[in-house]
Length: 449
Image (cartoon, rainbow, N blue to C red):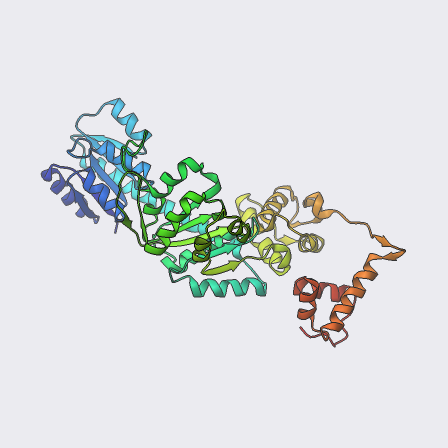
């Protein structure tokens, strides 16, 4: 059932609209002025449409719309006024209003407008869920390493324990954070997931952006702002590249983690939140801790559980399923009928080192789909760095392949011909060593997994 919030100080008008909408199967809630409506929205009450009068005491409809816009509370908003002017309509539209209706209004026109808004929002929600499903397909895997990581996500996801996600750029740290959030919030729950990109926000603005402020707290603070922490209340707050969080803000984050409290600028009083904090970094944090650039107590608090994402080059078994997912996605988006990969193309994908990890693989597949003129992706559709054939090197007259084979045999002998143990000794993955064993025809029945 769709929910409509009616904001008007004239109770006769509220009663008439409630009767009108309830007769059409809508659920209604009402507020006497903008301040009351704002508090309802801040508490997390969900509405499909907010229908507000313009002129009201305490906080009028335009100011309510402005604050909702500033706090990123994206509920479709319709403004009703008896003093309709072009200037009013233009200002409301700039602030994000769907429409402005003048009194007296036609009931049929209003019902048609609300019905259209609800249909559009339903389509947006379906599209959002579809995009989310496609995005999370980036976590497709076939390797034991990722299977173990998913097991950890399943265990720690439902609890509020802080998690530190580490890994090179492009390995999918935010996707892991969102999977943890889904386990915590429920797959179809609307609990917020709020991301803070620490290096992307100027240090001078980060505190107010993170913790919010009261109107008048500083020059330019023309209204209250909830901040990322307040917006994430009830859900998950994700700090991307936590190593770049300024040292001066680190005690405040520690306080948030320890006491679930924070203090917006200009308030002088702590506020309580129910929040789950996740952090990610592509850096080794022990060095900045040792150098005094990152608090040791904060490091240990965010590091309660660590999920270390291996680079794609160390889990080559994941390349084929990821490549097929990206191929299906981009083929559909670009309107092409590409059924798969030619043998040579898939081999090139699996042998490449992928310095940009999953993000680079996705971009390469998108490019290949654009360039492909057949029904399968071939080597010619791949970038030059993937197609390049490296010449055989010579060392004192012996081919490098012979040296590689000797090293492989030596590691297998020292490991009792256990492939997994030999891979650990050589610092390579099991998939890589299996490929080398087949390449040099070393499997005579004595090699164990």
